[in-house]
Length: 90
Image 1 (tube, rainbow, N blue to C red):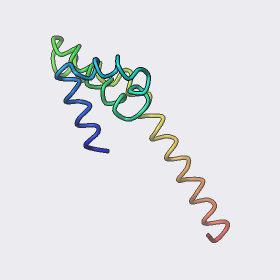
Image 2 (image 1 turned 90 degrees about the vertical axis):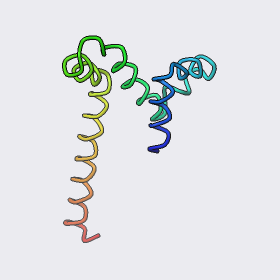
Image 3 (image 1 turned 180 degrees about the horizontal axis):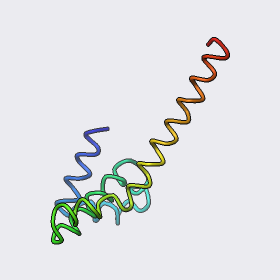
């Protein structure tokens, strides 16, 4: 997984990922590589505005909602699993 993310960010930085996305279609937007591409391309696009306000502020506009959804859903799944284990003795 880490190799796919690193490769996606590297190819985005080199400008190759967009060519692969045009060839492959929507398949590159679905997996984790598309998510890494969205973060990296936003960081590259806003680099001229500075590293803190440009890159840091705009990098997670699209990805922030995905990260928050993942954390919140993982919390609720863990809470349900804990409740079942306490009440059910599993």
